[in-house]
Image (cartoon, rainbow, N blue to C red; front, top):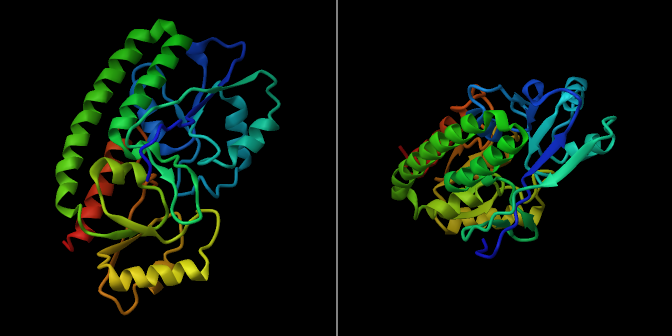
Length: 293
């Protein structure tokens, strides 16, 4: 965890074509960000979602239909290669010669989080797990859409204000909900929750895997077993995008509980409410397991 200046690379790919903006296709990579975009564009146009199921963006393999959607999109919104590592290859090979790549999200956030557990380092791309940071993302997207589509500037700005008010209310709700379990140590499946943990001062003491694209080594597993036995770990969390058997073996013959956290909301219906459903469910799952309720 660091408290230094964070430069988050939230990238919008602008693919301009001869069609007017009112006919443009907006494609968003993952469901939490898609939900925010859908809220901003409500009443104007419905953005498309690239990863609609339970796939991990860290390990995703594009289908031919995905490649077609990417080629047909006029605007693609994604986090960056730290999250959707599959996208740069197809964008490089794209037959659309007029792709412009803009680095738009450079946010200074005093509660910024970097991946720095043990030997794994780099930017944490899971920025949506902090509702107050999500507010800033919303404004950035609304500003960009207004610039590209000035005809609907008023709608984007009004929707953004409404969405930011909802995010404020959500933040206060989560702060109250999570307060009772702040001291209880837990282990997450992978290092996806740094922004959530920093914002609500949660007590994560490790992760099951250090890198979502690699299996954990024997030394790391032994260290986790020691933590579970000696630090009073209340819960270990799995994720639906990953195989849970390792977690089950780690807690065997211990009093540590396990539950599932899903930072992507894989089974939630896509749309403007998905983000809020996702965040409330993550908070509820944390509380239920850590409070043993």
